[in-house]
Length: 456
Image (cartoon, rainbow, N blue to C red; front, side, top):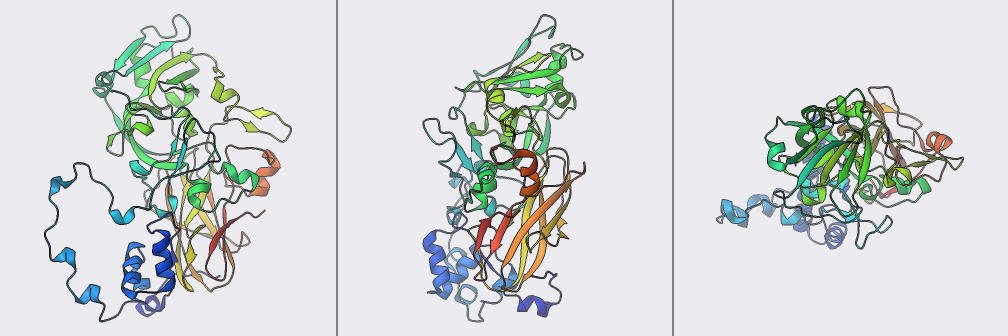
């Protein structure tokens, strides 16, 4: 289970390591069966390309008489589609299996209320808007932006001297900023508290995404309304959906300038399921506080104790008490490739890759273990590395075909270290739901199959 960089050209040519993706990613079950059986070399080579395997791996199956290289292919000898064939660009039909997936295990309201991002098929740190995870408390709605209004007021006389109501046009005329941040549900990895080994990283960690958000700083809007920022200690954010989601936000976050009233995501308007036309962006804080379909912010001097911060999104402690307002998403990481549901096809070099993040700041370091945490070695953090944003890490590994347990451990720039399950349960017990940031383990069997396991 040693690791090492691929050196010479000859070393790279000897490389045989490949990864068969999980069924959620790239290929259908029939496609994977065809690859595994080796019925058709041409089909196999096409799938290898679709899987995005490196040149070194592909070289082990290429032939000099490969018809896909030697012979003309249809797309090189015919006229392509015009620019306006699709007014809004869509993914290739060959990527039809890279989709968000639902879970029956979480709160349902009429229909499924959660959709998980396919982390096992992601590259870099940006989540496409169409693959961003979803969590709804009353279903999503598509609001007419011409009729949407956003109000700023105070909880007591004089708290906000000039209460105001903004239209979308009013807001979008103001100075805007764009920032990259991760958004994670407080219940992400929640099923793992009970040692429920869901099969893939899409289900263990898929309630996280990362986007560029564009909007106006909430601090600026409060100043425009002549809010008493010396008295105001909290703001209440309220959504316009059927659940009227309301959350308390501490003013120190607002005054830092990080909290945005946002309308843009990844260079376009928010998608309806992500809060169109307006949502709150609260970097580093659990996703439920990023109120969608935002209609009102109220300044006050104490927390509101709303329903979804009194009885939900609270941490159950070992003595049976609930700990409230623990909204920061602590330092965390996960290996996405190879991960549960995938398989290593042959011994040799594999580039272990994953994501790390912290609600307290930037990721400073990620360590990787291939022996269940007995030994750790530093991974490489790919640029850019930004505060309260996903960071991509890579680690070179040469698999010798023996059983291995893959883990990653993140450390942020405030000194917080991602805990083991034993360390986390010593403080939190075993009956919690939210804020699980324990180290994730993936078991690699001698046959190459990867599955979800838990270690101490």
